[in-house]
Length: 402
Image (cartoon, rainbow, N blue to C red):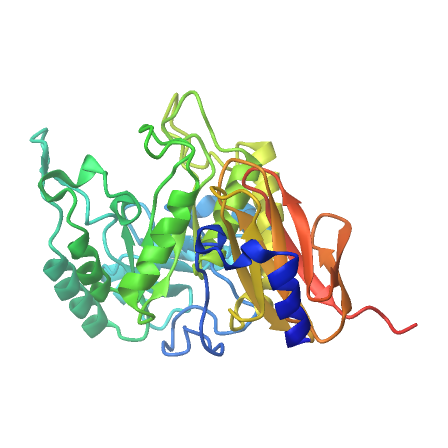
């Protein structure tokens, strides 16, 4: 079979060897072990668990978010308070929150599964009382604060959420520290879970606006800067935030989610606020179409969590794009005798993906999950069409014996 695949690549798909056409790298090396096993009071350790969070939401909505497939709160407004933790406990919604006196009084409470720094310390910091902004918080301060948080409670992980400078070097919001990428490998030393946010659909700058792949770039950079020593999550936009003219579509949100996962994110945090034209804290819950779409995305992630939490297999499959300027990102996993391929068109243009798969038989069947269609892998290969920012997830299994 290996020889046949080599012949196929050399004759039918000679452009597989062209580096310009290869997908952007995305692998999860090594055998799976729960990254949360090291913390007695941390997130769940089951292979079926994939963190899907919302950012800074009122506990009164926890049941509705839970129905949408959300399994975690991150942040509590001016909290945690006793009332907030009681409401989350009633809803069965765990939380990562600040380590204040109330939080520390709940050291043995399973509802708190992690601590967090203040948001976006890498951005220029407000001086208060209309005095403008000062420089970002130095990485050394974040590391020192991390040590204090760990000293007070080493049984839970500490989350650090960084700003859009992780993905975009042109971000001016870092003030006097603009364009200092060397800060980021130092920042991530001050946490156990490194996250970041950038919202390209609603972005105000043309360099980023509509370029969803900035989300994947940030994930890849965090993985590089952490060198496998930290867990990597990221934030996802699903409202207009402050853009009165544009808001994400369900198709764009799905693309951001899966390009994040394919590039190595192991947890998602939905940003669900709207600030303009009027403030809505739970704007996702007020958008029927987007709420239904996010619920479908979350359901699929939870169904595939045992696969996603398994080791990725970089040698199990390769993909090339028929359009030189339209890369397709790919992650391959196996579970229960099936090979799963997670593929995302990384640009706002159509293309054709040509896949090379290491499979044990000449012909195998691939179910395209959620699309009610099938592809057939013949002599180790198949191809499929991708519309702009399309996501295709394939489950490849041996056909039944005749």
